[in-house]
Image (cartoon, rainbow, N blue to C red):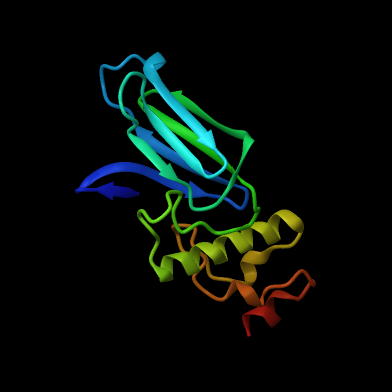
Length: 156
């Protein structure tokens, strides 16, 4: 979550190939008035006829042809397709709301595990790692490789 002066601006998450931004929309504004412009390294979000609510450079470049936004209930969901698949973003917005180093490390490990699972879905990578109830990998996933090592060897 990114906050500015104590107020939530947006929440976000990421996978190996996309970054999702969730913005709670102000009440009593018709949905047709909301706008979002996604560029390779920039995003603008606002209400037509007003200055943008968000007008910032992105941390990393995105594929504009496959990035998009939707409105559901009172949430704007912006899906940014990463140009560099597998890259861990510390924040969607350059210089704003950066993850701390420990959280960045955990996020890199989680994305690495996700990539391994997508590349070899028949292998159970969970046996060699400890996964916290939040879904974060909390031990060294880097020791996992694509070779089919029995679980007891990974746990040693």
